[in-house]
Amino acid sequence: MVVVRNIVLVIYLIVCIALIIVATMQTKDNDGASGTITGSSTNNFYEKNKGRTKEGRIKKLTITLGIAFVVLAIVLGILYVIK
Image (cartoon, rainbow, N blue to C red; front, side, top):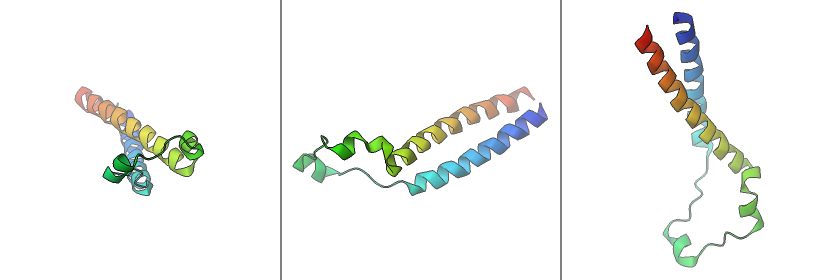
């Protein structure tokens, strides 16, 4: 059981570091209050294909790493309780 716990812990640390790096690579994509007042257009080609751009891939990777972070944290909690 100790070997499994150590393997999961190493994977968890790798996911943590990757999540920090990917989260800092993201760009701020909200318009704030000015976008609300001016009525930003969301019916253009870029908005429809946003997931295929570099920013879209980074956003999907951040979500995936965040989910992996939470799942691994729960698994580690369970493994440390079981002993």
